Length: 441
Image (cartoon, rainbow, N blue to C red; front, side):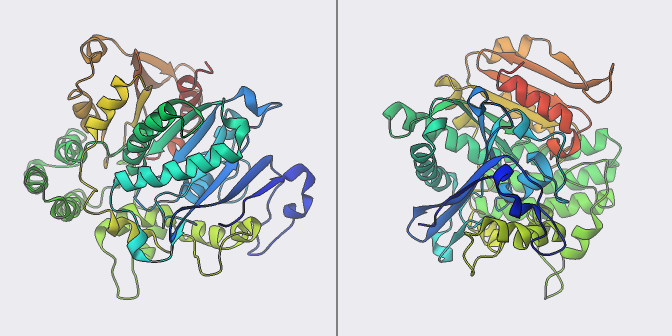
């Protein structure tokens, strides 16, 4: 098993000088990282930042799970969204480390710095993902005993939310059995792939309502989406994943290339260039939902100065090197819903939060609202009858930044002016939501 490293950067000024690639690493707070061998031939990497506080024990512990599957929490979530530094290694004003200790995990194995000795060791479904995570969390809390009593939350994004649901259920059972010692306080599902079919079936109506499809386009997208539905209803999930990718092509052809992550922004030129592999093409599904999490500048950072800083990454491991294989290995699980798991979590008394960006297409808010209405949760009727509450935009006084509604152990946040990556689009609003979910305000 690879060792973990801990450094307090106030006492490690050597890391504040240039270590290659033209970058320098500023002095930061206490952090630690390492590997856990979750199975034979399967090695998972984690990276913890202690909260920026006189006492981190006064603040919660948050684990962040990225999407894909194949997106790196330690890379994208850390440097592009909520970590203490951005990709230019400048301090992030909206870092979640200001309000919590943050644990990034490259999950599933094969993602980011995590790796497997062979493709056979890659995960096939969220059950395997959850089982691996239980091994990591057991190891983490046994070694970092100071976090056993601190409220522990799982926050997630995209496919990370689907994994977070399964992980939360497994963790709830593990805590009850006493096999993992932690104070599990809840799970938050951001723009999450909980009910894939509800998302796909609402792409057409959502785009039509925002004037991004005409009648002909709506007809074409609806026809393609129905093919996905047919495959799902027949239990042909790998075919459903293929049809999902075809539907996305139809969407792009009829919208002049709408950005699935934020309908009001253009596709990134850097990503368009990186979409071409040695053979001149990359499949649509990998390009759209794996490559955006591994843009060239981030890859250079992670495989350059950050790799040198960490000092524990095996020579044969490249950050993001197995990402596409991770996606392919999970393709048979990709279109399966996990709404039943959310019901189990709610019935078990677990605090569940759903939050979604107004401008997201891939996991549109309309689709999220549809699966929520299918819950068997006994509080659903009361929740549905409640009026939502407006939240002021922290960056624009007097303007609404979000709406939210909560009843018993379920909450929903509608984040305005944000797409799929809410912390990137609306950092201040995301930070306020974090504080509300973790009961800091």
